[in-house]
Amino acid sequence: MVDQFPQALSIAGSDSGGGAGMQADLKTIQERHVFATTVLVAITAQNTLGVKDAFPLPTKIIDEQFAALDEDLQIKACKTGMLADVTRVKAVVANLKKYDFGPLTLDPVMIAKGGAPLLSEDAVIVVRDELLPLATIVTPNLPEAEKLTGQTINTTDDMQMAAKKLQNMGVQNVIIKGGHFENDNQSSDFVLLSNGRSFWLSAPRVNTANTHGTGDTLSACITAELAKGNSVEQAIKISKQFVDATIRDGIKVGHGHGPLNHWAYRKVEANAEV
Ligand SMILES: Nc1ncnc2c1ncn2[C@@H]1O[C@H](COP(=O)(O)OP(=O)(O)OP(=O)(O)O)[C@@H](O)[C@H]1O
Ligand SMILES: Cc1ncc(COP(=O)(O)O)c(N)n1
Picture 1 (cartoon, rainbow, N blue to C red):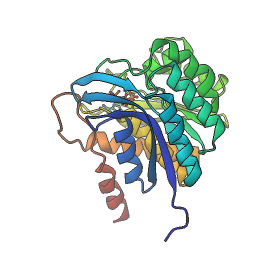
Picture 2 (cartoon, rainbow, N blue to C red):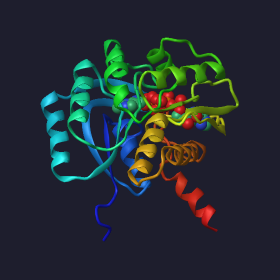
Picture 3 (cartoon, rainbow, N blue to C red):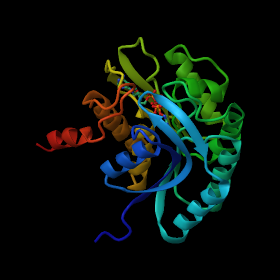
Picture 4 (cartoon, protein in one colour):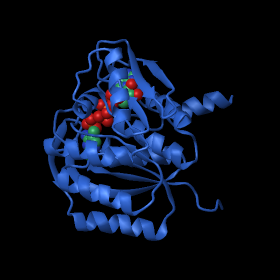
Protein backbone atom coordinates (compact mmCIF):
# COMPACT_ATOMS: atom_id res chain seq x y z
CA MET A 1 0.00 0.00 0.00
CA VAL A 2 1.28 3.49 -0.89
CA ASP A 3 1.67 5.58 2.24
CA GLN A 4 -0.55 8.67 1.92
CA PHE A 5 -1.61 8.20 -1.67
CA PRO A 6 -1.70 11.56 -3.56
CA GLN A 7 -4.87 13.46 -2.72
CA ALA A 8 -6.36 16.49 -4.51
CA LEU A 9 -9.32 18.75 -3.79
CA SER A 10 -11.96 20.25 -6.07
CA ILE A 11 -13.84 23.26 -4.66
CA ALA A 12 -16.62 23.72 -7.21
CA GLY A 13 -20.24 23.46 -8.25
CA SER A 14 -22.08 20.30 -9.26
CA ASP A 15 -23.21 19.83 -12.88
CA SER A 16 -26.06 17.31 -12.77
CA GLY A 17 -25.42 16.60 -16.47
CA GLY A 18 -22.03 15.16 -15.52
CA GLY A 19 -19.94 17.01 -18.12
CA ALA A 20 -18.51 20.04 -16.33
CA GLY A 21 -17.97 21.35 -12.81
CA MET A 22 -17.18 18.99 -9.99
CA GLN A 23 -18.16 15.94 -12.03
CA ALA A 24 -15.55 16.77 -14.69
CA ASP A 25 -13.01 17.37 -11.92
CA LEU A 26 -13.69 14.00 -10.28
CA LYS A 27 -13.46 12.10 -13.56
CA THR A 28 -10.22 13.87 -14.50
CA ILE A 29 -8.49 13.50 -11.15
CA GLN A 30 -9.44 9.81 -11.06
CA GLU A 31 -8.03 9.30 -14.57
CA ARG A 32 -4.72 10.79 -13.40
CA HIS A 33 -4.56 8.21 -10.57
CA VAL A 34 -4.98 10.73 -7.78
CA PHE A 35 -7.55 10.43 -4.97
CA ALA A 36 -10.19 13.15 -5.45
CA THR A 37 -11.89 14.98 -2.60
CA THR A 38 -14.52 17.73 -2.82
CA VAL A 39 -15.94 20.85 -1.24
CA LEU A 40 -19.30 21.43 -2.92
CA VAL A 41 -20.11 25.16 -3.16
CA ALA A 42 -23.26 25.17 -5.30
CA ILE A 43 -25.63 22.77 -7.03
CA THR A 44 -26.80 23.33 -10.59
CA ALA A 45 -29.67 21.66 -12.40
CA GLN A 46 -27.95 21.36 -15.76
CA ASN A 47 -27.64 19.23 -18.86
CA THR A 48 -25.92 19.60 -22.24
CA LEU A 49 -28.66 22.07 -23.30
CA GLY A 50 -27.96 24.51 -20.48
CA VAL A 51 -28.23 25.50 -16.82
CA LYS A 52 -31.85 25.37 -15.56
CA ASP A 53 -31.25 26.51 -11.99
CA ALA A 54 -28.49 27.02 -9.44
CA PHE A 55 -28.48 26.82 -5.66
CA PRO A 56 -25.46 28.11 -3.69
CA LEU A 57 -24.94 26.16 -0.46
CA PRO A 58 -24.99 27.80 3.00
CA THR A 59 -21.51 28.86 4.14
CA LYS A 60 -21.87 26.72 7.30
CA ILE A 61 -21.76 23.49 5.30
CA ILE A 62 -18.97 24.88 3.10
CA ASP A 63 -16.90 25.59 6.23
CA GLU A 64 -17.71 22.15 7.62
CA GLN A 65 -16.55 20.40 4.46
CA PHE A 66 -13.18 22.19 4.64
CA ALA A 67 -12.83 21.37 8.35
CA ALA A 68 -13.66 17.69 7.78
CA LEU A 69 -11.01 17.40 5.07
CA ASP A 70 -8.40 19.18 7.17
CA GLU A 71 -9.03 16.87 10.12
CA ASP A 72 -8.27 13.68 8.22
CA LEU A 73 -6.80 13.99 4.75
CA GLN A 74 -3.43 15.04 3.37
CA ILE A 75 -4.41 17.10 0.37
CA LYS A 76 -1.45 18.15 -1.75
CA ALA A 77 -3.15 20.40 -4.33
CA CYS A 78 -6.52 22.07 -4.80
CA LYS A 79 -8.55 23.91 -7.43
CA THR A 80 -11.56 26.18 -7.51
CA GLY A 81 -14.31 26.17 -10.13
CA MET A 82 -17.83 27.65 -9.89
CA LEU A 83 -18.01 29.80 -6.75
CA ALA A 84 -21.42 31.44 -7.37
CA ASP A 85 -21.30 34.78 -5.54
CA VAL A 86 -19.50 37.14 -3.16
CA THR A 87 -20.57 35.24 -0.03
CA ARG A 88 -19.27 31.89 -1.35
CA VAL A 89 -16.02 33.40 -2.71
CA LYS A 90 -15.31 35.01 0.65
CA ALA A 91 -16.05 31.74 2.47
CA VAL A 92 -13.63 29.86 0.20
CA VAL A 93 -10.94 32.53 0.63
CA ALA A 94 -11.27 32.35 4.43
CA ASN A 95 -10.92 28.56 4.40
CA LEU A 96 -7.96 28.56 2.02
CA LYS A 97 -6.21 30.99 4.37
CA LYS A 98 -7.04 28.80 7.37
CA TYR A 99 -5.91 25.41 6.00
CA ASP A 100 -3.02 24.23 3.84
CA PHE A 101 -4.29 22.21 0.88
CA GLY A 102 -1.21 22.79 -1.28
CA PRO A 103 -0.92 24.86 -4.46
CA LEU A 104 -4.20 26.37 -5.67
CA THR A 105 -5.21 26.25 -9.33
CA LEU A 106 -7.79 28.99 -9.78
CA ASP A 107 -10.18 28.35 -12.67
CA PRO A 108 -12.14 31.63 -12.58
CA VAL A 109 -15.39 30.12 -13.89
CA MET A 110 -17.83 32.94 -14.74
CA ILE A 111 -20.24 31.97 -17.51
CA ALA A 112 -21.31 28.50 -18.71
CA LYS A 113 -20.88 27.60 -22.41
CA GLY A 114 -24.65 28.07 -22.82
CA GLY A 115 -24.46 31.64 -21.43
CA ALA A 116 -25.74 31.13 -17.86
CA PRO A 117 -23.88 33.09 -15.15
CA LEU A 118 -22.00 30.87 -12.67
CA LEU A 119 -20.44 33.82 -10.78
CA SER A 120 -22.30 37.02 -9.94
CA GLU A 121 -20.91 40.22 -11.52
CA ASP A 122 -20.01 41.76 -8.15
CA ALA A 123 -17.97 38.67 -7.19
CA VAL A 124 -15.46 39.13 -10.04
CA ILE A 125 -13.63 41.84 -8.11
CA VAL A 126 -13.48 39.65 -4.99
CA VAL A 127 -12.01 36.79 -7.03
CA ARG A 128 -9.46 39.21 -8.48
CA ASP A 129 -8.49 40.95 -5.23
CA GLU A 130 -8.83 38.17 -2.65
CA LEU A 131 -8.58 34.76 -4.35
CA LEU A 132 -6.09 35.45 -7.14
CA PRO A 133 -3.22 36.33 -4.78
CA LEU A 134 -3.66 32.92 -3.08
CA ALA A 135 -3.35 31.01 -6.36
CA THR A 136 -0.29 29.26 -7.76
CA ILE A 137 -1.86 29.15 -11.23
CA VAL A 138 -4.82 30.95 -12.77
CA THR A 139 -6.46 29.46 -15.89
CA PRO A 140 -8.90 31.99 -17.42
CA ASN A 141 -10.52 31.58 -20.82
CA LEU A 142 -10.58 34.70 -23.01
CA PRO A 143 -13.76 36.35 -21.61
CA GLU A 144 -12.61 35.61 -18.04
CA ALA A 145 -9.16 37.10 -18.72
CA GLU A 146 -10.89 40.19 -20.13
CA LYS A 147 -13.04 40.58 -17.01
CA LEU A 148 -10.13 40.12 -14.62
CA THR A 149 -7.75 42.49 -16.43
CA GLY A 150 -10.26 45.00 -17.82
CA GLN A 151 -8.66 44.79 -21.28
CA THR A 152 -10.09 43.41 -24.52
CA ILE A 153 -8.37 40.40 -26.06
CA ASN A 154 -8.52 40.14 -29.84
CA THR A 155 -5.00 38.99 -30.71
CA THR A 156 -2.23 36.76 -29.44
CA ASP A 157 -0.35 39.90 -28.37
CA ASP A 158 -3.36 40.85 -26.25
CA MET A 159 -3.23 37.41 -24.60
CA GLN A 160 0.41 37.91 -23.67
CA MET A 161 -0.28 41.37 -22.29
CA ALA A 162 -3.22 40.09 -20.23
CA ALA A 163 -1.08 37.26 -18.80
CA LYS A 164 1.52 39.78 -17.63
CA LYS A 165 -1.21 41.92 -16.05
CA LEU A 166 -2.56 38.90 -14.17
CA GLN A 167 0.91 38.05 -12.92
CA ASN A 168 1.31 41.65 -11.71
CA MET A 169 -1.93 41.18 -9.74
CA GLY A 170 -0.14 38.61 -7.56
CA VAL A 171 -0.55 35.16 -9.12
CA GLN A 172 2.70 33.35 -9.96
CA ASN A 173 1.73 31.37 -13.07
CA VAL A 174 -0.84 32.11 -15.76
CA ILE A 175 -2.37 30.10 -18.57
CA ILE A 176 -4.76 31.98 -20.84
CA LYS A 177 -6.85 29.48 -22.79
CA GLY A 178 -7.53 30.20 -26.43
CA GLY A 179 -10.47 27.84 -26.88
CA HIS A 180 -12.78 30.79 -27.61
CA PHE A 181 -10.79 32.00 -30.67
CA GLU A 182 -13.15 30.02 -32.84
CA ASN A 183 -11.96 31.23 -36.25
CA ASP A 184 -8.40 30.03 -35.61
CA ASN A 185 -7.51 26.53 -36.88
CA GLN A 186 -5.34 25.99 -33.81
CA SER A 187 -6.49 26.08 -30.20
CA SER A 188 -3.57 27.84 -28.55
CA ASP A 189 -3.06 28.63 -24.89
CA PHE A 190 -0.47 31.12 -23.63
CA VAL A 191 1.57 30.15 -20.56
CA LEU A 192 3.54 32.61 -18.42
CA LEU A 193 5.50 31.07 -15.55
CA SER A 194 6.76 32.58 -12.28
CA ASN A 195 10.38 32.40 -13.53
CA GLY A 196 9.47 34.68 -16.46
CA ARG A 197 9.51 31.81 -19.00
CA SER A 198 6.61 31.85 -21.43
CA PHE A 199 5.44 29.57 -24.25
CA TRP A 200 2.44 28.61 -26.34
CA LEU A 201 0.69 25.26 -26.17
CA SER A 202 -1.16 24.60 -29.41
CA ALA A 203 -3.26 21.80 -30.82
CA PRO A 204 -5.25 21.65 -34.07
CA ARG A 205 -8.79 22.87 -33.34
CA VAL A 206 -11.34 20.05 -33.31
CA ASN A 207 -14.56 20.95 -35.12
CA THR A 208 -17.03 19.78 -32.48
CA ALA A 209 -19.85 21.03 -30.24
CA ASN A 210 -18.71 18.61 -27.54
CA THR A 211 -16.54 20.94 -25.48
CA HIS A 212 -18.61 21.14 -22.30
CA GLY A 213 -16.20 21.12 -19.37
CA THR A 214 -12.90 21.66 -21.23
CA GLY A 215 -11.72 24.33 -18.80
CA ASP A 216 -12.67 22.32 -15.72
CA THR A 217 -10.89 19.29 -17.13
CA LEU A 218 -7.69 21.24 -17.86
CA SER A 219 -7.55 22.79 -14.38
CA ALA A 220 -8.45 19.52 -12.63
CA CYS A 221 -5.68 17.73 -14.51
CA ILE A 222 -3.18 20.44 -13.51
CA THR A 223 -4.30 19.99 -9.89
CA ALA A 224 -3.90 16.20 -10.03
CA GLU A 225 -0.41 16.49 -11.51
CA LEU A 226 0.63 19.03 -8.86
CA ALA A 227 -0.68 16.68 -6.15
CA LYS A 228 1.71 14.01 -7.50
CA GLY A 229 4.60 16.45 -7.09
CA ASN A 230 5.07 17.45 -10.73
CA SER A 231 6.31 20.95 -11.51
CA VAL A 232 3.88 23.61 -12.72
CA GLU A 233 5.36 23.41 -16.22
CA GLN A 234 5.08 19.60 -16.35
CA ALA A 235 1.53 19.75 -14.96
CA ILE A 236 0.41 22.27 -17.58
CA LYS A 237 1.98 20.35 -20.49
CA ILE A 238 0.46 17.00 -19.47
CA SER A 239 -2.91 18.68 -18.95
CA LYS A 240 -2.99 20.26 -22.41
CA GLN A 241 -2.38 16.79 -23.92
CA PHE A 242 -4.99 15.25 -21.64
CA VAL A 243 -7.73 17.77 -22.50
CA ASP A 244 -6.85 17.64 -26.18
CA ALA A 245 -7.38 13.85 -26.20
CA THR A 246 -10.74 14.18 -24.42
CA ILE A 247 -11.96 16.58 -27.16
CA ARG A 248 -10.37 14.83 -30.17
CA ASP A 249 -11.59 11.31 -29.29
CA GLY A 250 -15.13 12.52 -28.58
CA ILE A 251 -18.26 10.73 -27.38
CA LYS A 252 -21.94 11.51 -28.07
CA VAL A 253 -23.95 12.22 -24.92
CA GLY A 254 -27.01 14.50 -24.79
CA HIS A 255 -28.42 16.85 -27.42
CA GLY A 256 -26.50 20.09 -26.88
CA HIS A 257 -22.91 21.00 -25.95
CA GLY A 258 -21.82 17.45 -25.17
CA PRO A 259 -19.27 16.36 -22.59
CA LEU A 260 -15.71 15.14 -23.15
CA ASN A 261 -14.35 11.62 -23.32
CA HIS A 262 -12.50 11.44 -20.02
CA TRP A 263 -11.12 7.98 -20.90
CA ALA A 264 -9.40 9.15 -24.08
CA TYR A 265 -5.93 9.82 -22.68
CA ARG A 266 -5.60 6.13 -21.70
CA LYS A 267 -5.20 5.31 -25.41
CA VAL A 268 -2.56 8.03 -25.85
CA GLU A 269 -0.58 6.62 -22.91
CA ALA A 270 -0.99 3.02 -24.10
CA ASN A 271 0.29 3.93 -27.57
CA ALA A 272 3.24 5.80 -26.04
CA GLU A 273 4.24 2.64 -24.14
CA VAL A 274 4.34 0.41 -27.28
N1 LIG B 1 -12.37 22.90 -30.36
C1 LIG B 1 -11.24 22.70 -29.68
N2 LIG B 1 -10.24 21.96 -30.20
C2 LIG B 1 -9.08 21.75 -29.52
N3 LIG B 1 -8.84 22.25 -28.29
C3 LIG B 1 -9.80 23.01 -27.71
C4 LIG B 1 -11.05 23.27 -28.36
N4 LIG B 1 -11.83 24.05 -27.52
C5 LIG B 1 -11.09 24.23 -26.41
N5 LIG B 1 -9.87 23.64 -26.52
C6 LIG B 1 -8.83 23.60 -25.50
O1 LIG B 1 -9.46 23.22 -24.27
C7 LIG B 1 -8.87 23.90 -23.16
C8 LIG B 1 -9.95 24.70 -22.44
O2 LIG B 1 -10.16 25.92 -23.18
P1 LIG B 1 -11.49 26.77 -23.21
O3 LIG B 1 -11.09 28.09 -23.74
O4 LIG B 1 -12.55 25.98 -23.93
O5 LIG B 1 -11.85 26.83 -21.68
P2 LIG B 1 -13.20 27.20 -20.97
O6 LIG B 1 -13.99 28.14 -21.81
O7 LIG B 1 -12.85 27.63 -19.60
O8 LIG B 1 -13.92 25.81 -20.89
P3 LIG B 1 -15.30 25.45 -20.13
O9 LIG B 1 -15.90 26.74 -19.69
O10 LIG B 1 -16.07 24.71 -21.17
O11 LIG B 1 -14.96 24.55 -19.01
C9 LIG B 1 -7.74 24.74 -23.77
O12 LIG B 1 -6.53 24.01 -23.71
C10 LIG B 1 -8.19 24.96 -25.20
O13 LIG B 1 -7.13 25.26 -26.06
C1 LIG C 1 -21.13 23.61 -12.15
C2 LIG C 1 -20.43 24.09 -13.37
N1 LIG C 1 -19.14 24.46 -13.29
C3 LIG C 1 -18.48 24.89 -14.40
C4 LIG C 1 -19.13 24.96 -15.62
C5 LIG C 1 -18.36 25.49 -16.84
O1 LIG C 1 -18.36 24.64 -17.94
P1 LIG C 1 -18.87 25.09 -19.39
O2 LIG C 1 -18.29 26.46 -19.67
O3 LIG C 1 -18.33 24.05 -20.31
O4 LIG C 1 -20.38 25.14 -19.35
C6 LIG C 1 -20.48 24.56 -15.67
N2 LIG C 1 -21.18 24.59 -16.80
N3 LIG C 1 -21.10 24.13 -14.53
